[in-house]
Length: 325
Ligand SMILES: *Cc1c(COP(=O)(O)O)cnc(C)c1O
Image 1 (cartoon, rainbow, N blue to C red):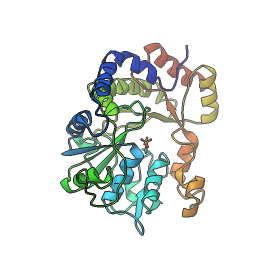
Image 2 (tube, rainbow, N blue to C red; image 1 turned 180 degrees about the vertical axis):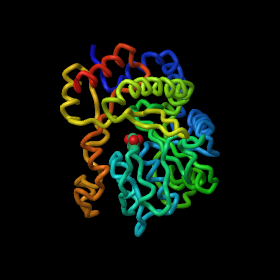
Image 3 (cartoon, protein in one colour; image 1 turned 90 degrees about the vertical axis):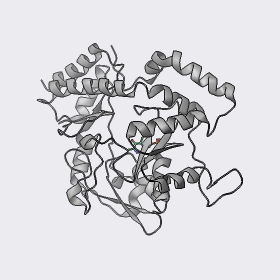
């Protein structure tokens, strides 16, 4: 029995009878960009995130890039971010001409708010609020590997500000305020109708999927916390466990042991952003962010998705447990 890290095709199979008809409807309509599926998705996802507005864009990196641009962040600006993220977090900052400034993370993997002047919070379902409603804007990717996902690239931005909303609506479409008139140079970064239709179908399931992910995470935590470091949830947080990240001694040997048993794992991420070649010009050295660097050598992401069977979950637990015996 194999335990792949993700199984997107299996999830699609379960939803095929719903997804194929909506995709066919879009194809038959002849309206492929900025149509009614996107409009519907934007209203629904704003409701889900409990924000006034949402804007679909081409991908998660563009969600960051357009948001930074809309907030007038560019040359001569510095943007504080964490070194233990996907490369796009810093890449989007550099793409608008600003300078990424890294601050070390805490034991909970989030940026350490005590190390920055204005405490920043990027936690999930924080004190009854949803991710996306915490700052001026929320940026989301719907890449196939994310919980709510498109059949290709996609993303969206949430905001409560009418001003920011109106600016991003134009920014994603060449600064056009109507078909003929452009107010400022912008981007081509729209979320296609086919993807919006697929997201509209998936939105019905996302709460169930989050619950199923949480159930698996709680099972992993209760069985594995005596052996390895498992994620901790504060009483006012509710994670949707897009990843289940443990910290383990002899991580690389554990990973090999699991792989030999047919259990696939990932590392998010093995190289902190400040040590990537792309970030060399920023002048950071190894040792600059000791917590993030230590974690990058000990973290391991275990498979966590609704399609996992009970037997597969048991096998993962057995895999980790047997390594330390
Ligand atoms: C997925 C992800 C991105 C990139 O999103 P794309 O849609 O692939 O551009 C950026 N930052 C983080 C933290 C992510 O997880």
